[in-house]
Length: 112
Length: 116
Image (cartoon, rainbow over all chains, first blue to last red; front, side, top):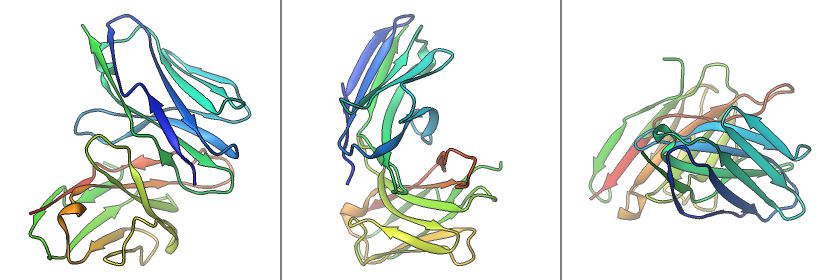
């Protein structure tokens, strides 16, 4: 099955700086890659996703880049704010499969 | 609130007891998923339904676990003879799978199980 790994496990950044989280996946047939944000005690919520036919996608301060050859995709958060502090999960869904495989999560701490 | 709702939100039980969780998905969503999440980990897939049909079960799902979605709407997850290792957050999610949607998962707030 699909194996998804995230690095680093914890990331601390100064408010206003950028944060980058990298995710690797194992199944070259995977074709959908979402990022979910989970604040403490809250439900995971989708913040951005990308499909395998696109290399980059941006939504305001958040962007995701995909490198299919290297089988990794990254979440970029610019101009970080305290409310960006959360755990971020990447996930992948292989072609023909019907359920997301999640990574273990990255704790992002934005220091005011 | 028209999102995914789960209850109970918290359940404390003694080892060996049975527990049942309920999930009410977003009404027009045809897919319903159960995930389990432990501290410091990502959600782990347990099972999913398309309408009332249970289409896949994870190897994580022992025979003590059973899930149903009898009318293709709400779902229940029952754990029989609970063990301390069953302590976790049980997350339900729903999605709409069709020709013109992304299949985004909408999660509920989860049901936290503590087995003493």
